Image (cartoon, rainbow, N blue to C red; front, side):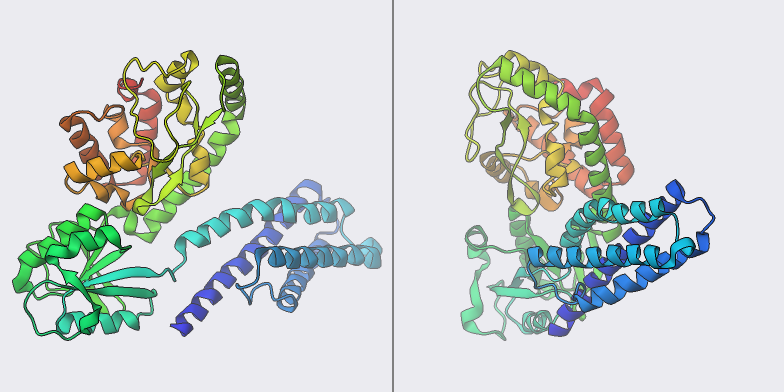
Amino acid sequence: MEKVMIKSKQIVNSVYFGRDIFVLFISFLFSLYLFSDREYMGAEWALFLSMFFSWFLLGYWKNLYSDNSVRKGSKVYKYAQTYIMLVGFAFVFFEVFGLLAPNRNVLIAFSLGIPLIGIPLNYLLNRFVEKIAVNQTKHTLIAGIGDSANHAYKQLQSSQLATHNIKGFIKCKEEECQVEQDRIVGDLDAMNQYLMSNKVDEIVIALPIKVSKKVKRVIDAADYHGIRVKYIPDFQGVLGKSYKLCRYGNMDVINVRQVPLDKKSASISKYVFDVLFSFFALLFLMPVFAIIAILIKLDSDGPIFYCPVRIGKGGKPFRLFKFRSMKVCDKAVGGSLSTKAGDERITKLGRILRKYSLDELPQFLNVLLGDMSVVGPRPHRSYLNQQFQSSEEKYMIRHYCKPGITGWAQVNGWRGPTETKEQKSQRTQHDLWYVENWTLSLDFKIVYMTVFDKKTHLSAF
């Protein structure tokens, strides 16, 4: 495991080194394009190559790419030192070589371009690396206590893909026990209670095929709690269609309820879409934000934003940003008051904001912070989540992906109240269909329908 962690650090460090070389190169190209008179092109490229090798040597000297354990502040200080020494070298180059040196404007533009391009790129890359980090600890529960379960336990303990905290074993049938007795945390009857009281990220089913009913019970319990499931074959018959064979350590397993966003290429493309769309949306909407903020303060007393806690991906809570549209808002944490038609709490301005979903615009900040996507199932309050979880089959599967500012249920007219069984079922079914059928083109379609389709705003109040 230590070797794997070292390897992953080397990969991350290589990514950061590539980022810095990319920043140097782009800064140089921009400075050439804007200020070069082409007279000293050879000298300018010589300067770039010199700075490239200088950055490499300075980075090695300052340990920029060899230690991930240092504090962020210390790392920033090292980068600042390296940058100052690099720019100093560039200006010495200019003064020493005189007429053979490039245009001074090229040099100045190059020096200024490094932080101007590097700082925002560094922020986005840090967010990206955090999302795709391979060494996340997973709290794993193994269903079974026989040979297969013991084999799975040993393999997971030596896995080179991730670190696993094995919570224990669930006894599912009468079989010869091959695991430590004190690691057995319960049986199928006590499984739901255990999952309610303990953090579990995934369940590994290690049972023979002849106990398919037992396997189905484990999957049903996992679906109820929104927990991912890995099934070590034997398979089929109880799993349905949404599964995928894959490698898990040194074993072949089935990823139960495989969804499109489980693919790295899909999750990366959605992440890039979210970041770019939200960044430009916030950029162009700044004047609108300022106007709405002023109108809210003029319309009623209270803060500009209302920031309730909502449930996000994997059941994790986060603070959601909205423009305040009510005189008296529900509690940010643990609130249970649903909005209803003709709600007296809504301000005059609030009715306009809610009708056209303008109160939701600050959630583009949530997207940039990584809590939400532009498109996905709408995030619910904790108490509403519990209601849906109890009444709607497979509801928690919607938490396989990030919640969205808009979603498939919303553009099909299932936003707003969830008072009836049909309203709850239709919203859940549309959300699950989105999770199981996601494509990037579907996200574009939903964004288009959100803006231009009248059906989206029918239930808004």
